[in-house]
Length: 199
Image 1 (cartoon, rainbow, N blue to C red):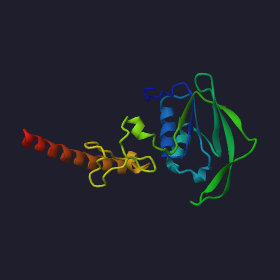
Image 2: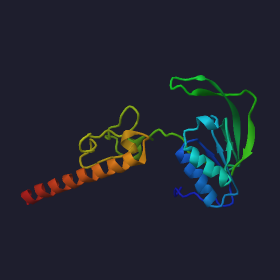
Image 3: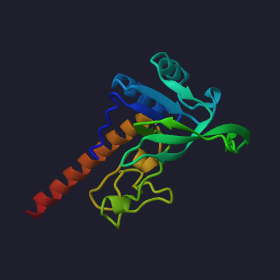
Image 4: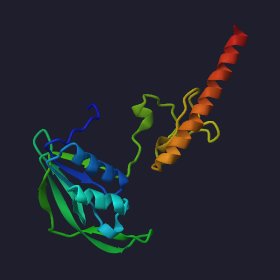
């Protein structure tokens, strides 16, 4: 509930194949996890994460389980195991990557005390989450902002980074944050001048 995970002494399973998944498996190792497995639905050659990070993680003791996908989480009051489907790669999709397909009757169990889903994300219901039903969002669920000022449709509320542009690189989030900070400074200075004139 506090957003803090401690992998110490646990059998950790990370689901995903990108750089975030690599951060999760390597952090789990550093937190002294009992075991760390990374489930990825494609093979090593089709993994989006950095090949160097994968090699480093393997050297540190992470077990990669290629061509595998979680089917079901099991446990009483907490996670105890995952039912995993074995995958085969089918024909290429519109991006040119071969589509993962579940192999019928191939599922098996793996022990897990902690599961981390390090997958691409979809935004939550942000107007509801922020208790601001008037907040405008795009058809993808990201926050709508003025492209120049980064201000939302709510006066004095600004947004930047992935919550506006969708999943992207951290360098873009940093740039957006700096641009938003400059806009906020301008907004506050202009508001201060108006208040002084009124006073």
